[in-house]
Image (cartoon, rainbow, N blue to C red; front, side, top):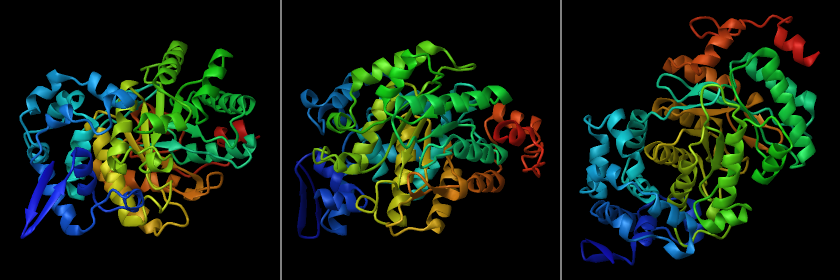
Length: 458
């Protein structure tokens, strides 16, 4: 039992799970789940009570029973007590102050990431203003490698997302070349297929790999089909660079996705065995998003932001190249408007980085949400300041297959220009060699006879 008194009113919270939920900033998903604070005053009471909870409590009081959830077991069994030792004496509120202190720099944060549980990260985020989330995330540096280096300070990468509603190879190729000529694609060239047909996924893998090899592009490919499809294709000798899967923060959620930890283990080892990376072997790509557990009726009464942080424990186990929170994709039932989407994105990015993950954000919204492109511009700028590893690059910011609004090739150019950021270094050198950008990073005019145009589209 946790409690805090305001005036003559005593606010009581039955357990840590309830306290975390009541302390969470307002969002429609928690209202729908029936777990949110009933008033602003109750939320403040919960946040004050949460600030006094020792971090050690999160190791002794689990929010989903150990025996019923394999993610809880992963969190507890893989916890690094040595890394935790330097912060084990802190409360959640003291942990916030410690994270924000000047003495806690990038190197210090690296030493404790394995000692932080997702629930600790979620808890401290609930006590933070947006600027706090940005300031701490900015100090985190998570670097991963496959064919280029992603996440270095001063760099900002993009996933080139050339989706097509019928998986038309020429349409996908046109979008892919368009993106490359705008300097997009250093994080990954990643396609959401319209169908999970193994034959079509194989064709898409070969398309990207042929272009990559033809022009010696230092990047990686990924087809975002189900993990079982990729496993099947690996066994058939497909050119798989990264293995993708959507993941959630509870075992029951992952069951609804058709996965479990054993299947992820198998896919990870199979993808590693291909040994296709040239400078590193971070071979996994995960996507998450607040609200997945509620939409699967698998949240166990846990608020959606804490559930999201628990998904990062799954990702962390496999040392991924990329983790992407698709923040506004599920819809206004979970994040109603631009304000809620912005807050959720900053929380996700902060928690992921604090836990040692290479976080990107799909800065997006569905057409029935109370949000617009101005909200996305604001979030894009905030995440650029916060040191986000990568965002999406989509023709015109409008995904014609998934039917949602995201960020365009031009948006990435904007962030790089105003914040003085560069693509991944190996990819930047390739762009300069191809005459796509100059030494200052400025985009150069495209010659109609450029070999990317003539070599692929003709």
